[in-house]
Image (cartoon, rainbow, N blue to C red):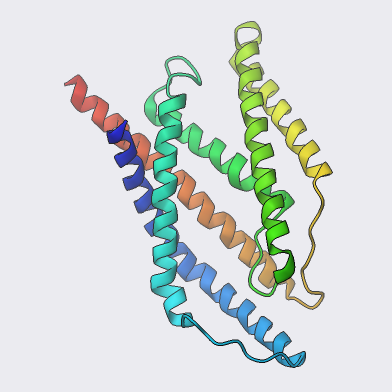
Length: 238
């Protein structure tokens, strides 16, 4: 277990480094634009300028790298724990590398993609400070619903596997997941705090970059972790 955890953290760190490069090149220009818009709104409303505790240069370099690297490493460790639980339980005969990639794809789907359809990522200047706690609760609530729906869908697929075959079982599980997450998304309250004059292209680009960062983290962890585990198994076999 310890060796798996170490491999997961290594994969997560490498994924974090790749995600940092992507965020630095494509994400920071959007954040700068959003901050500029926020400052213009504050000046127009006569609000006093807030003191800068950490400089923007530090935030966009060392701060960004540290944050993404820590998150990536933590994700890698949690990914290793998930792999230890699911390895050999998804489908009989599946290789560790394939299992790792499937777990990464399912994790990206359940923890990021589906929750962000309901509550997408927003740049600075979008969202009221008074509702940040409420919005955070709703977002994590959607993640919990999504993970629960995924667990139910996997269980349903396994139940039908012997009766209808692999592909049909996957379709049944997918249908169960879509139905349950659609219900959760329907009943959870919507949040729309985007200012009327906020640039639509900026909002779109920021959300695309957010999607890209998460995609890089999840897929890199899945691929590198699978390679490390496969290589370890080959050494043991020889």
